[in-house]
Length: 102
Image 1: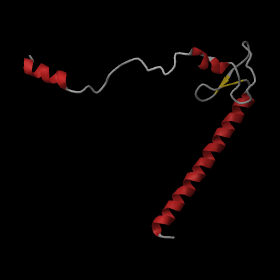
Image 2 (image 1 turned 180 degrees about the vertical axis):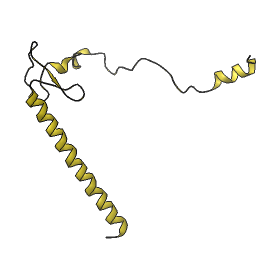
Image 3 (image 1 turned 90 degrees about the vertical axis):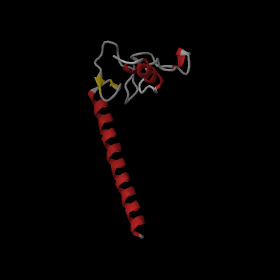
Image 4 (image 1 turned 120 degrees about the horizontal axis):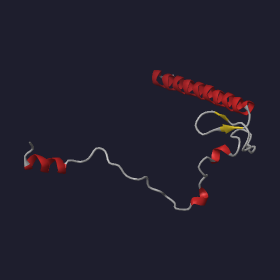
């Protein structure tokens, strides 16, 4: 049993979680990609994907017209990741040298 004082203090506390609909910046639908629009063209070569053709998926909402296009994107993503890892390592080495006093 809660006292009226306890109920009143519960109401005045700030809420941690609130639910609401997402805010839409624009009501113009023409500037947005239609739902499933990523299936219309290959992410890698930009060719149109046939409606009755196979679709090869990779990563988040990336559709490809062939396994070769998908593999090309995977190779490119891996190369970018490798280069960014090397750049980060070089940056850390420079920071370490600056701290030592070189």
